[in-house]
Length: 319
Image (tube, rainbow, N blue to C red; front, side, top):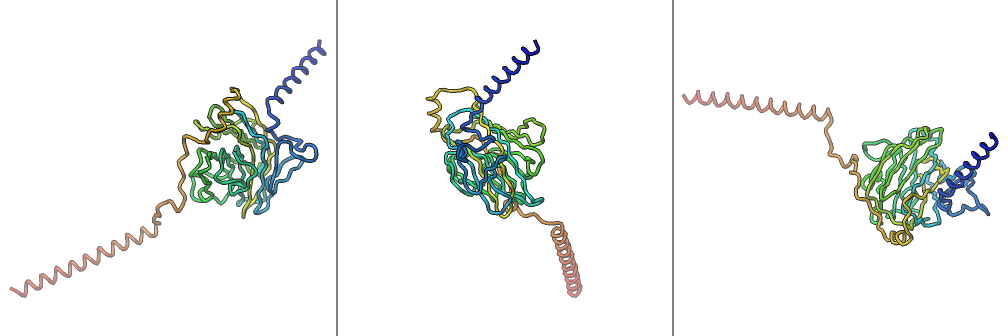
């Protein structure tokens, strides 16, 4: 009986594994071992400084002025989906580091540009993991920071403002230079975008943000890109797993959704930076301003008294 029970347990485990493997769509996924025949990445292309090893795909090394990307070569015709990315960002810098990387669901692939190594004025979705430690302005959050941007080709990502004018939502995320694996989940289900993280080695998803009424077409491509400038880091992709979510719609509906223009109903209110703020006065300036006012008051009082005394003396002479 023990052998029979063990056999059934193994049989159930086998079919569970097969079903899980079918659920994860391999043509949109990137898992070890990465290489196929001829040292290529099946269904994926990479550019720039990207280095593929047996354990990770390094988009940029910890060297200044590098840029790299990896892009799926198959357009996604799934309406509802989820991607789980295992990544690692590390480097020698303790106080200064950057710039970060982005995860893409975009119309144009393999186009280099200024937005974390990829194209500006893009069409689609960008999930930006910004690590730039010397960020611009007194924002109400710390870095690293995760944010989402939806673009229909008319918006530019403003690095000087850390993208705060165009992001739909975001959250702080301490994922840099940790000793354990870090994960991010991006789910798009019934026009709701949910981003979750597992950054504390607890094997639990924590909601970063949610956004409703997000419209994304089918037929776009998944990718990841990174860049370094004066500051640098290693930006590594360890795995990229794609899952098709229910409900599954018919082919005609999926084809019709290709013409949808990417959009989001609500943008997060932009945060101010230094040059946007009205200049305030320091305590020293306030002190000297008060002192100047007191001196002026005393001087006016003295002149008033002197004027009064002269008038009084003149009136006596007349009598």
